[in-house]
Image 1 (tube, helix red, strand yellow):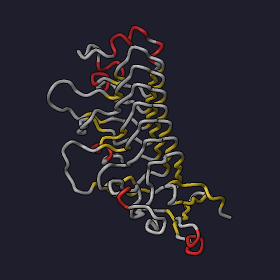
Image 2 (image 1 turned 90 degrees about the vertical axis):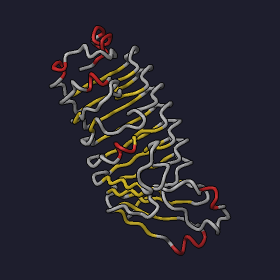
Image 3 (image 1 turned 30 degrees about the vertical axis):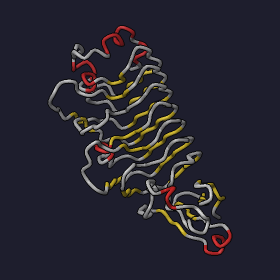
Image 4 (image 1 turned 60 degrees about the vertical axis):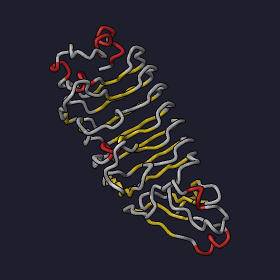
Length: 282
């Protein structure tokens, strides 16, 4: 269903009184919200209760949407298992949250497999930490052209663990493109384990992907990175081969590593903090 084709339904969409019958959308599997000018919340809580079979959600060009999944307004919690597998968000200029801040898991999105977010310039954080702990089926994560995105996983106001561990056993493809403010995968101490086969990091100048090498040799003060933990600080990434080229690093200190499923390898230059495609492995 494309909501933009149902103007009368749009008028009732954002009402918080639960006026829509829960049985209306129980069998709906694909939902598109495109160029809906009157929506501030893409999926209000009372609508989410109806979407028991939804697997594909696309929200595009809705200029007033500030949050995708609305929170429950009344007290108490009701666990809502979601069948959602594919989430696509495009061109949402006012989007500030996908899930509300301090999300506590009263809606379960454990079936998410593909997440794509692009051109959402007001978005600063993608996943709440409570949700990120449950993304065991996530296979593909693509984020591009979100100019103010600071972190992929946001911290909670109340800290639970000193070191957060994110297990993403199905994650094989990670793409981070044109994210000028992205600084953290997660702003506190963490580890992440996954099975990456494809990795693209382009135009993310503030993100440290791997632990910097030879920092004293290049004359960079460690204080510049004291609060920035790299994504793969201990290289706990399965199915990834990596190596340090002693000969070339004597002249150009960098990490050279390649993925087992990809013919490309990447050069890491500590001078700039960027990754660059180095060529094709023959």
